[in-house]
Length: 192
Ligand code: FES
Image 1 (tube, protein in one colour):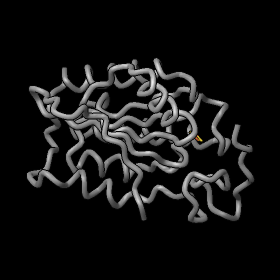
Image 2 (tube, rainbow, N blue to C red; image 1 turned 60 degrees about the horizontal axis):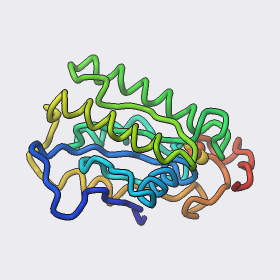
Image 3 (tube, rainbow, N blue to C red; image 1 turned 135 degrees about the vertical axis):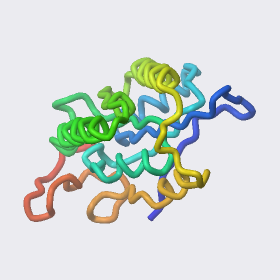
Image 4 (cartoon, rainbow, N blue to C red; image 1 turned 120 degrees about the vertical axis):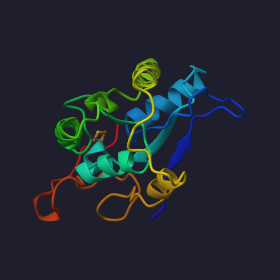
């Protein structure tokens, strides 16, 4: 499966501490907001790597834990505003999973703030910029994750193998929510 990935690190820009933040973004809202921020030339921290998903409902607990295990110092999940998910409840499922992971990593002594959920609309480019700046500052204050693996390419490998398609194989099509089994899925809203 093809992973859609955008690297926001400006060419040649280095950080004093090479931190890695993975942002799992909904195609319809957060990814579009990131695009808008880029078009408006709003500065983004160089630490954030964006992975586009059809809906944040695609994110599960194992994916979030896997990102941490494979070298992410922080993980963002950024989806549509609550009530505006194109798959109806995908972003609500995502929030529950983020909260579950925050509780789990807290139990092993890792800071729960390393995993955060954000919501925004496609027109909220500044909200995207604020979210990544907030996350960058948070992770910079916490420092590198103690879970970092010794293999430096672990995170790249994980991202390369993320399934970014929806259940029926289409990339970011409005069909059934990937958070629900096919038998219970209902049609999503038409794309606005
Ligand atoms: Fe955007 Fe579900 S979070 S479509």
